[in-house]
Length: 111
Length: 115
Image 1 (tube, rainbow over the protein chains, first blue to last red):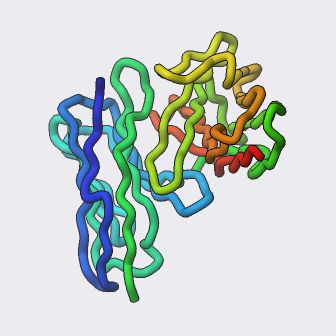
Image 2: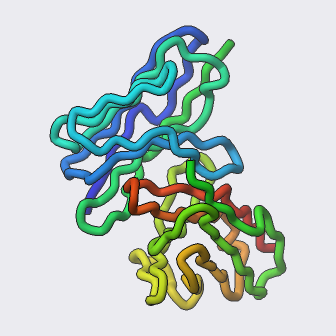
């Protein structure tokens, strides 16, 4: 069974601080996606990484896919209250294409 | 990005009735759609994979006779919760896979409350 361990699960920080969320697995994924979800809404895609070692930037968010395509990280620089939400990583199974979700990281950024 | 719609966005029903939820990919064709269930403050739990033109494949522990899935076209999948009970109350989310970019796009979710 493929598992994706996401950490930390809860994070409360002050505005302006930096943070990193990690997703780790012993399995290889064909791609990895990061989503952000607001309460009562569906997850919204932030980025898809496909190539081992790939780095993508989205304003203050930096996403990295591990060289072996087994892990990924999300780094937020100078967090703002608007970054508050649930962040989900999800790896696509090489065999089935199904998404394997991490446990999610609930981020709270205090003004 | 691609858009996936869900209807209805919320529904309240009496115990014993059936509820149908629609999931549509609006600007791409999706041979594969997925149905998830989410409990408060938790991650998404995959219920089943919906394949256009063939039977859905269900995850372990999900009753296929309880949660009927039909993928009638490349842009529409439906989930019917049959004989709903209060324990079926949850947030149901669908996604559609765009094979061109290896990405799943999610619908906005349907909040189901069974009284």
